[in-house]
Image (cartoon, rainbow, N blue to C red; front, side, top):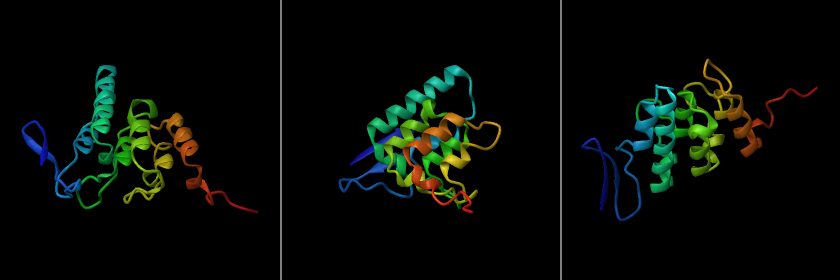
Length: 144
């Protein structure tokens, strides 16, 4: 049994069966929920932390956040305005393509749509998400 600790609080519990307890919060989700600052020094530290967490266990890219409307880490990262090169790419490539095909339960948007709206929209993220999984855009255009 191995327990990963963050600031003296258990945030992830792994057992011999390699299953992740759904009652715990992944360190990746904690990092993304509190990723408000966009100063370059924090952006670099956040990017390195995301990469380190995913290298330790890529399964955390599929662990949803808690709450009444759970979100995948990919959705949280885009919501926080994290760009493709600053963490979205690492999260998208670590998780299955299913994350790119999953709509946000609150906004009903695919990740590429969410990356295109708001003050922190990132066209590069939109392009890269669509390039990695173009099937999500199938059927969105009107046919005449």
